[in-house]
Length: 188
Ligand SMILES: Nc1ncnc2c1ncn2[C@@H]1O[C@H](COP(=O)(O)OP(=O)(O)OP(=O)(O)O)[C@@H](O)[C@H]1O
Ligand SMILES: O=C(O)C1=C[C@@H](O)[C@@H](O)[C@H](O)C1
Ligand SMILES: [Mg+2]
Image (cartoon, rainbow, N blue to C red):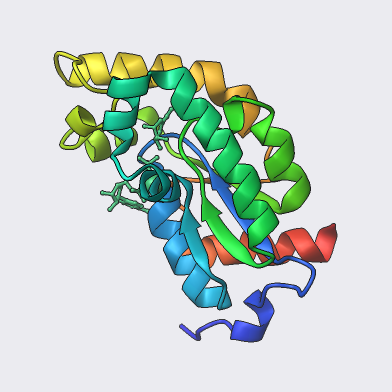
């Protein structure tokens, strides 16, 4: 099989910011890092940026200040980040598009990609780490985790579906996403 030419997948000069949205465990951070390398763009993870600014973990912020405080910090940090970085691949938090008009910020300041992954796969990926996620901790078992993820996805689906590009598993490979991005720019 011949490898596709890298030129075909080059990011158009007009696309300087890529935003990845999707459920916890969808692969935003993993794919975001790979896209940043592929396109030669800086990478930033919004959760990590908040943690750095607050000098405490997301779980600690939720436990000590509550979710509303976290959502406000998330909204402020998102706006700072897009104002600061003219070129960027940004992995958002799972809830980022759903609060404080962040969706509008994401859609108007970069090309937003939704990583759609079935809940069964999210359960597999998150089972081991759910205890460290404030909104997924304290669930009794995998069935509880699955129920919580289904409810969360149902509430968020409308926000996620606003992204102009949707990459559905199992085709969320780096190459598949690059093809979707290239196709978006040739048909837009
Ligand atoms: N395409 C993939 N196929 C299989 N596993 C993957 C894939 N992408 C990511 N993973 C795995 O799924 C887990 C979650 O990935 P990642 O941290 O990138 O997701 P995320 O969307 O950033 O999650 P969060 O919202 O919690 O930050 C990790 O263990 C990662 O190795
Ligand atoms: O899905 C969510 O609401 C969250 C996902 C994480 O990325 C963090 O932003 C935080 O744990 C909240
Ligand atoms: Mg992440």
